[in-house]
Length: 305
Image (cartoon, rainbow, N blue to C red):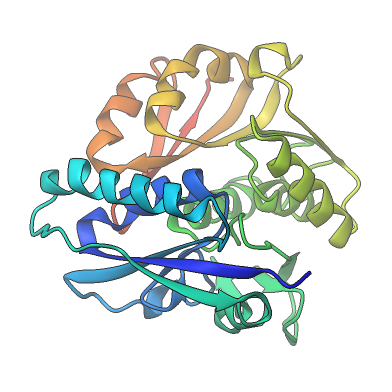
């Protein structure tokens, strides 16, 4: 049966985009668009720096649409006033036929280079590899990221610096990926020489997508699961955690315990305003660097040998 989709369009200040996008992803379980570009696209830098942006969520155009519309209106009315420049505008609902959505959203996904060596390539795009490239093939679907979001991008860049600038071109064998999402960081770890990778996420759908992308990239050294952090045995030469700042701090003792002596800890998913909160939440580790991209921070630390 042909399914139609409803596109819910909200006009909000640029400062509210990330908050609204997170709300829509959690509410709908589907992709989010900004100004006709997918939120987590390969052309993220092409989003214009305009004060008001159109944020779009997608849900089936069925009996549940009205409830979703009401919840979006409620969110805008209650959360919007805390953002400078917010003026309430009623969300606009458009119906988009399924085949249009299924094909059109892919137009904005192009291969993107991250750091010096990594390239993330959607499966439907051609790319001519250059010498030394580490290519990650990805098919994110509607609900999961491509790896080009600033939080993931900075993790990848930090992993690359650790691998090539500090360790001579090969990561330690054991890597832990907390909040794996679509598995991009685990795949990158395997391409950089890690041979025993554990990837965990609280969302079973994220684990499923990770496993699909591992197969797509013919990576067999990653074990993906929903195993809680406190039940993961051993320690790891690199631990990367791309989750919310508050969760990083809550899990700090467990994350520190999982870092092997002399090992590295990469923390992302941190709004810059919460950067110091996270730094203070990880005592006893040496602060190596803090990088920034838009309103996001990525913190790299190291445990004494």
